[in-house]
Image (cartoon, rainbow over all chains, first blue to last red; front, side, top):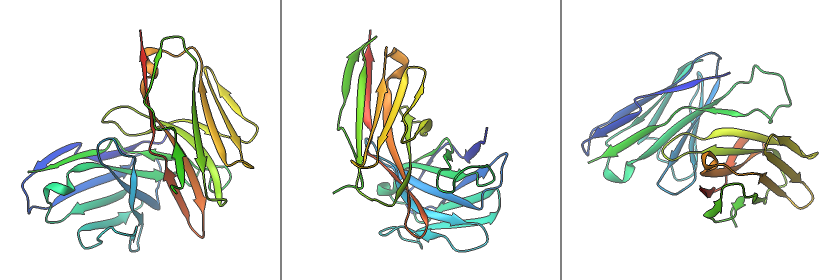
Length: 121
Length: 111
């Protein structure tokens, strides 16, 4: 089955530093990847949709200058949390759809990466 | 009103019990529906898709009622390993595809 990896799985950084998180699709090409954030005991909230070769689409309330997304290839998207602060501490999860599989458009499941737990001190 | 609403939970049930999760969605542009399972500090994993005709996978049965905009998941003969958070997930097509997650319902199965 499709696999999505994330790196790092866990990071602690000091306030004011930047952190880059990588999301890779391992056995399929993902023209679109999604970045989510999940705070404790809350559901996943979509932050942005990452499109290969073009600018990401950010959800309302998500600062694009703070959460930089780069989708440089069909298998890699990166999220950089710039000047991280303690309130950015969260579980960041990426996902991708495998559009190459048959089925009704819109019915594709998403494959999630294992997540990156960010703690900003 | 949230676009996808689930039972607040948590549900505490003994092993062997049957437990039902309910979910409602508000957007009529919703196209496809899923139940995901999320273990603590892990990513969500697809449990099953939900079809209008209803579908079953072992001890799990999912149903969709488009007229009522209602989705359900039934777990029979619950196991300790079923303890997790169950997420109701809806894909919308509103000019672009968007996935909406419910807040999840936590299930604790006890011996």
